[in-house]
Length: 185
Image 1 (spheres, rainbow, N blue to C red):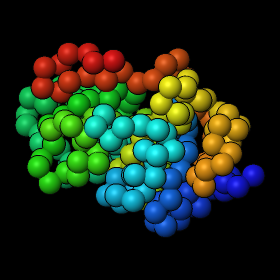
Image 2 (image 1 turned 90 degrees about the vertical axis):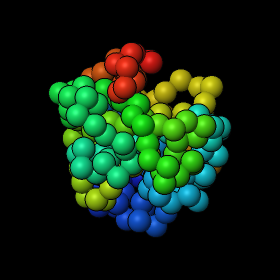
Image 3 (image 1 turned 45 degrees about the horizontal axis):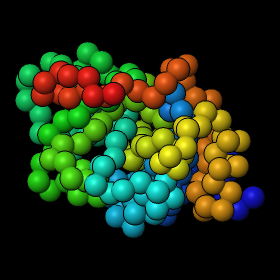
Image 4 (image 1 turned 180 degrees about the horizontal axis):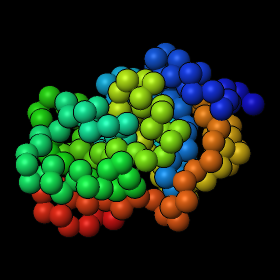
């Protein structure tokens, strides 16, 4: 198999530092991720997933502090989001103008989550940064829940697969608008 496959978080961190795309377990499904500030890595991830850049991406993090540089926060937004984190709730929050368009797409906001999944959380903590997090599947295909499914689906891709168990969530995380509180997914 062409991919690197391991349960070693340090090996995954080294792949991220090298600008690679990785697959890793999250609360409900396997995610594809990379360094959000590495444009080449993000473009490679979008290509693997066959996802249009205009849609924007989700970032996951180990803490709110990791996400702060990517967000425009106020007391009202903080009061809405902080009780749900860490957890399986993704919030769409206004983004400052300096956040790269390869992350926000056609939006002036960014979808973010402080993950409660222990492997994903440790990965963000050890990397020292949020990660891009999008479901590990081609855009029109169902999301995957096992490393084996990811290996089979992306056999021709040069991604690193971090082996681990996904969380108990039955479907992908809920997404809410942090300004209005409305549920988006």
